Length: 248
Image (cartoon, rainbow, N blue to C red; front, top):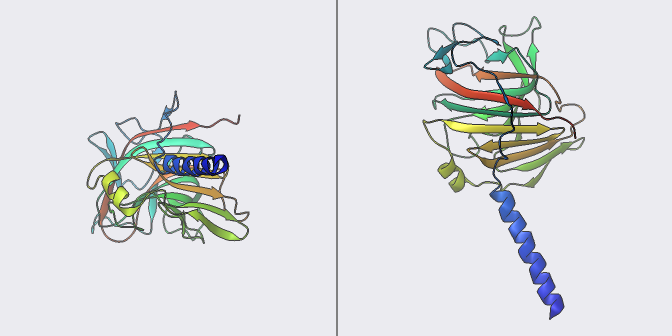
């Protein structure tokens, strides 16, 4: 009887741990985070002046039939790096195309680059959609070979053998639909420490990736915001702040 009770207690504890993971909140914001955008102009940033501006106190990127992007193009933050970091911001965009947040990425300046603001590396996907898998929050290997590195809902590990999906139920379709604010501002938190990366949406954990791929992982690089080539689109960003995570 005691053994059965003990086993039942262990099972309950495991279930509770699972619930905590599924309902994981973003940690409290670190004190003293640096502000990356002054709310007035694009000081400290560099991008195609035809496409990027500040309107009503927010960064706005927009492509039109008259002002199209020549390939994916980016607004690059020039005043810091993204290594072990906590990054917080809010975004909104329309549904005609997609956008992204680049971190631990590289500015490509070789002669074969489509434009002066090509960036490659980890991208936190941004979309104004709620149907899996094409939603905001997955990691995309912009300009790389791995495509969608980790989807929303997944806890994955990459190593020399490729991708291993440890679980895919961090968040489901119905919960995401309630969490995401269509046509409105959504809050993003990206926490990357060593090989472990977590994405949070509106304070909830939606994706975790442990990237130990010896050839393709990224440990340092720049921060940038994307305008995607193709259909005319717009994306807006505000309250961009960043903090380095110091080694313990």
